[in-house]
Image (cartoon, rainbow, N blue to C red; front, side):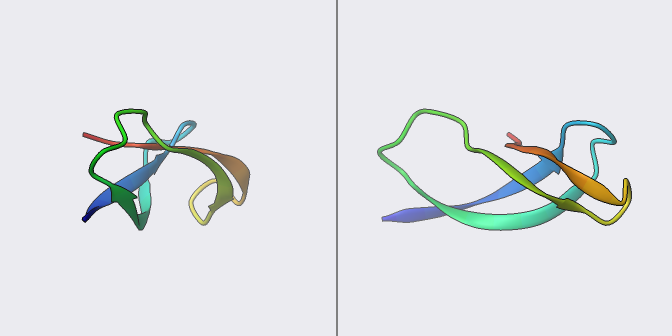
Length: 48
């Protein structure tokens, strides 16, 4: 089963993306993605 989670920019804290995550996984997702607010590629982390 999968759960929807939001990804927030580590620089400006803007929540730009959503993605699916396995419910059995306990680690937080960290992906480098483009942030429209910052205008550059930054690290995006899973929010609570």
